[in-house]
Image (cartoon, rainbow, N blue to C red; front, top):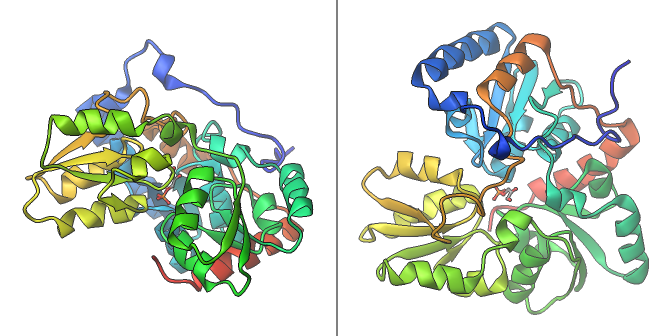
Amino acid sequence: MKPNLVTRRPVPYLPIFASTPIPEEDPDYVRVMSAEIRVLARRKNAVLLVHNYQVEAVQEIADFTGDSLGLSLEATKTNADMIVFCGVHFMAESAKVLNPTKKVLLPHLGAGCSLADSISPESLEDWKARYPDHTVVTYINSSAEVKSMSDIVCTSANAVSVVRSLPNDRILFTPDRNLGAWVARQVPEKKIVVYDGACPTHDVLRGANVLKTRQAYPDCVVIAHPECREDVLAVADEVCSTSAMVDRVAKYPHATTFLVATENGILHQMRKRYPGKQFIMADGCIGCRLHCPYMKVTGLADVWRALNEELFEIDVPADIAAGARRALERMMAVPRD
Ligand code: 13P
């Protein structure tokens, strides 16, 4: 029987605790495996969409790397028969919602999202009952069912524009409290009630840590993701989505060092695009904190197996998909911030 991936939640597997060597650190393995994946993808007419937080070797086999908005847009444009989504569950689910006739695969069922899990349909129902006259804006880091109960979706790339685009002055923003509070500061003319979810990877960082790291690089530019707490965003020069974080570096042609406050996978795209610049994690640590175990669970072997065995297929019940598609399509009509 086909597992119901909407109701059966993935069980996280945390490779950070594994004692075996990480195969992606072996250049021969990476070369051979990547070549096999590309052959399989061509044979199956599959497109590989890869989020900016994935491990480097997986980013390197991508047809497209990007942020949640960019990858959702790519998912609507593709002519491929199959979408292999190297990211987390809600991203593959959104791709399926936007492409009901295509096969959408998530290579590893452990690729969940704590932030998306912080809001359940029941909890949103409860908040909607408390704020009945509010327009519900839901961050894309949420399940399809939660999206289907929302008026419109947003990502970190367009949250401010989405909220500004709405005629209602009363907004219920879910589930990320840090992004919601940041949007509320940009759009003071609206009354925004913010749900109390958070991404643990971003929420752990404190402004004091960023300031301490900055002392060692006094001329650096601080670039932060809006899932960070208010005290972090207050000391940032730029606050934006992951792909915009990469783009914004170009705004500072004379700067040599950038402190980056988001999941460490983004450094790969930054270093590739700007080889002469120095990129440092804002918390000064080597990856134990600004490291999302769910984003890092997918390896090359998972992608190969996904293509070979056509696993794990993401399905969304038609009624939920219809509601989620409406909320996603409304969002896609709004430009980036
Ligand atoms: P972006 O849309 O900015 O890539 O962010 C996705 C995400 O999950 C951040 O934690």
